Length: 248
Image (tube, rainbow, N blue to C red; front, side, top):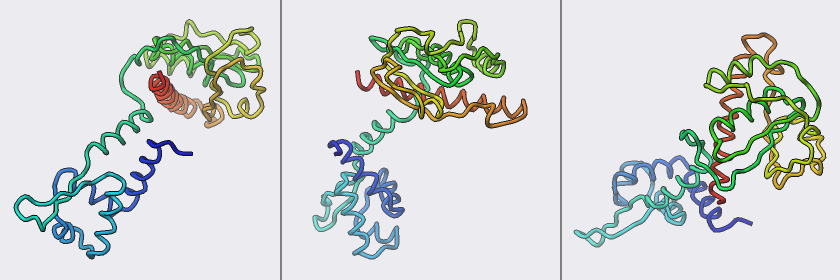
């Protein structure tokens, strides 16, 4: 069941899903217009315009008030407080550019888990430590042992000023009895097969990411995919921290 905020947002998004209503709201954010002026601007019939205005009004997106000069005339305006409310919702879902990210008290202990603790989970750990050291206590591991070198991952991390010297490939078993606030699987195979009872975590999340080696067969292509992976991980980690901050 939707809560009051979600229900209000659903009305807003439904109201703005029509191109005409989107254009009307856009125009009214900076220009108050009467019914007749809106009809002339958009070329809509009186009945259709009234329908659009009623829908926008029911969603709380516009207000109407009588003219001081002629009480028979009414002016429509955008409700900018409603727009600010939607902006606040989107701000929780769009990654901030602020670096480092805001600190949390206490920090969230998070484990990034993939098949062999290769590019995806290692990079996630390194990025989290770099941009969210005050918010996250980050670890990474694989469900299977693998100590193969990760030159492309380390190269891309270095491009962003992140040293890989503190990264260590390890297995989930190697973490022993360490418990986590959140475990994030970054591999579909692990997500689909892992026994969550092994994870010793309060919260379980999944990010469906693909290893760069599986997306390109040549070195140049793998490097480009690794750079894309970095961007996606930075965005996902940023939004994750923002959500944690919103809960606090």
